[in-house]
Image (cartoon, rainbow, N blue to C red; front, side):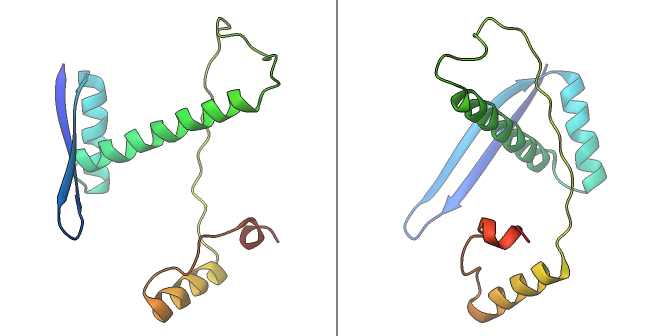
Length: 121
């Protein structure tokens, strides 16, 4: 077993908060995290934090899928199945880049979060 420790520091006006997660992972997962870290030129802890975030997002989407089912439930908890994950990189368009640059130049931060109107033609 390999042990990895993750720490997050958040600095506020008056205090510093930190969250620590000590996690046991097997040698194969540790090797994969190290491989990705070397490929990206990042620390293993940063890669592991991002991968953990992806896993949390997958879990939330699975929960949302369950909640969107009819109240009688299409599948019971005893039904065996698998999780299918799909991911793709979608580059920004030049229009999106220009808008982001304009927002950052005008007030140093994005003025608002994108809406469906922003992403649908």
